[in-house]
Each structure stands twice: as structure tokens, then as C-alpha cells.
Image (cartoon, rainbow, N blue to C red):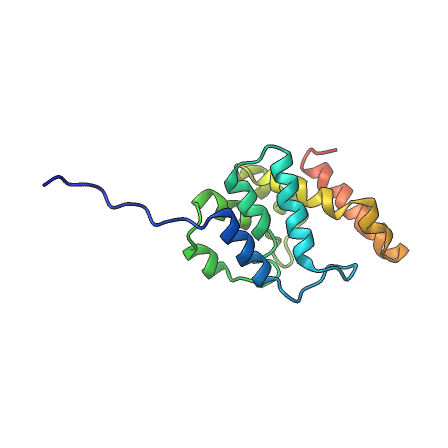
Length: 155
């Protein structure tokens, strides 16, 4: 009889992560009133188009889940996801009252997280998405996204 190490638990596939993210955010809409899953799909597609790994694509699907309380941090900790994916999700999760410099430093310090945030910012700052917002909101968000991009070195 040979001693074989126990196999690692099966990880969620990208299709399972997508389905989970869509369920978790069901009924939520973005600032323009669109189904929130459209944003998640766009961020995941952006990560894929930028050459991201499956771990990064999974993080893209889940990037707002903890921040929006669609899923708990406890759920994430026990999820059948790689530790890298979990770290990326937590890195891009903005914490209440957190200074922007701390937030962006955490993203920069977490392998793979910058690509997820870059894709998120690209979709958030899409002129077509911003065009449907009122001018004060559009201006505020445009400035916010530009500041985050600058802090992340994405200018």
C-alpha cells in the first residue's frame, strides 16, 4: 500500500463562479439602472482580453461581492477557490472609511489584483456608461476613477 497525499478539494470552475456571482448580485443594478451582472461580465471579459489567468477572471466575477455584501468574507474564506483568487477579491474590496492610498497600495501589493482593478475601472469609466448619468454624478465619478488610476500607475 502506498501513501498518497489527499487530493485537493475541487475548485469552482469559471462557469460555476459566474453563475454564483450572477445569483449573488441578482436584483442589483448599477448607477445607471442596468443589471449589475452586466458590469461583472464586462470586468471578467476585460480581464480575459488583457491576458488574465483563470484565477484573475474568477476574481473579476467576484470583485464586488464582499464589498456589496452579496457574499460574506466568511463565505469567501471557505469557498472552493484558489488562495490567489481570494486574495485578489479581498484586495479590490474597498473598506468603509479606508483612505484611497491604503486601498490602492493593497491592490498593488497583491499579485494579480491590479489587472482586475484595471478592468473594473475601464468599464466604470466607459464614456457610454457615464453618459447616462446626471452631470454632477458623471463628473464626480470621472474624477474619482482618474485619481484611482493615477494612484495605481495606470494613467
